[in-house]
Length: 178
Length: 223
Image (tube, rainbow over all chains, first blue to last red; front, side, top):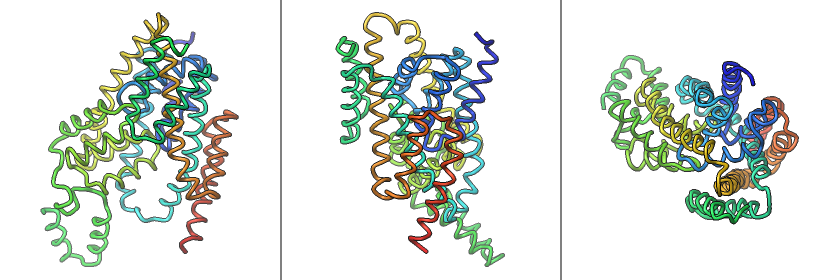
């Protein structure tokens, strides 16, 4: 077990870096968060990561809170606070600094090119997140069915996603999914 | 009104520079610089911003953007619909969680650094506290009785939500740009999801190429 300070340092560096490359939001960096937390630092297994992601999704609020929970798992409440701050601070400072410049160059060619060029990269990253989370969560066919039904319902209807989470949680609580 | 007047004054001083300033003002999505008819309301203080974003943070499950829109555009009337869309586009282009960026942009435009800090704090504080309580409960009771079953069920549904998000993002993009977008989606997916390469190398290798390709394609379409 490494000293707490070391773990906090690792968390800070890792999430501060991710903050600055999280184009398209937190879902885009889930593969990297999982790689660091599971494969590199061994803070948890892929299954535990899927469970923490489920908790982050089931809680109200922005979807960057998987970083809060990874910090919590790695180093308790201090870890959670460090990871949350590191995930927010760099991109916030960048955004704060860039707002005025950005408005001035609204029609610049490079702005449109950066936006259009990053779009497929972001989509690829979110697709990778979906793939990894599905692989970690779907341990048998009933769970795979839950994933498939949730994906279909969310894709084809405007139903609040909370209903799918509640139904899946209820089925699991009733012992029907294990 | 005050701002408009000051601009007219400025006009008289330097006609040339003013033309520039007016174009900038017309194009900015800064609601306080727009015609008063577009958005009548504005937050009165950083505390106002804090409370609005507190409510946004607490109301959204699995992503809060729709709730942010409802609050800022419909309930408070701080942003006109098109201003909200533009601001969101900016927040989505910049790195970092989109709603967090939104809180910074809206907060700083209305009330500077303090406004940004207040909006961010309002958005983040309550959800982080709640998720930590849930995590503590999970740590303590997660292995008992039928709770593990509930958590794997939630995990499967949560994965399904991300699958749907990925599909919603991918389908229109591939339809619009099958040649300049599709291969990059596939390459990033393979490199990060299947081969598990470190994100930073994938981004450094593929993002610049994707940007150049997007730029060349749009240049060809609209010379």
